Image (tube, rainbow, N blue to C red; front, side):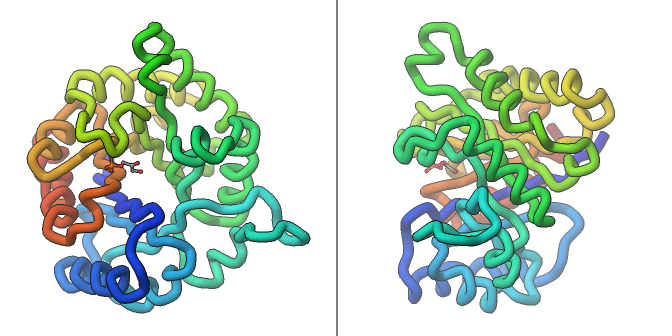
Length: 259
Ligand code: 13P
């Protein structure tokens, strides 16, 4: 089955109003026309969603948010609901990013609630999973990823999977400059696809997009994206530089077409 490549730019807690809109504008100029060949999504910080949304309007880039509340509304100071995001034209949300799991203490159960809320609200979701270095070196990488998946997908119906991308983001590769090898990514993606096959069915397993994240830069993107089962990337640092991000998007189209 052919899966459309997906590349996301996770800006994290970077940029300001001026640099964020300038970055979006540089990307929108290059990705002006709608394309069936690839999905490109940018995930700016919350305060800049509306401004970035205006800049990319009419381009082929979709707007994403870095988080979403598990609740509909109410007395939850600082939280942002799915409805609020939809109001601003947001189409995608990140759920379960390792920085939220490990630095902000989000448990698997909260990740699952956010995932379910986003899906119920009509958003598309990039669900992030991945093991730490200690979990990997002690031989628990696959178990950790499978446990994260089992919890997250517990309440997700099969007909929602077309709105889900899974990002395999090994924690040891995020922001470290040490990307997983193409073989590492292929193996982990195989485990993840196998999970979808057993939780749902083989057709959904072969249709779901699984992207790799962790120190993807222009020089390694093509090799990683050419690995079987790798459908694109979730990019942190390199998504802040328009030329790097655009080069990575091109590699996703080329690499996956021939990979
Ligand atoms: P880096 O590309 O900076 O390693 O970050 C990856 C990431 O966390 C994307 O969500």
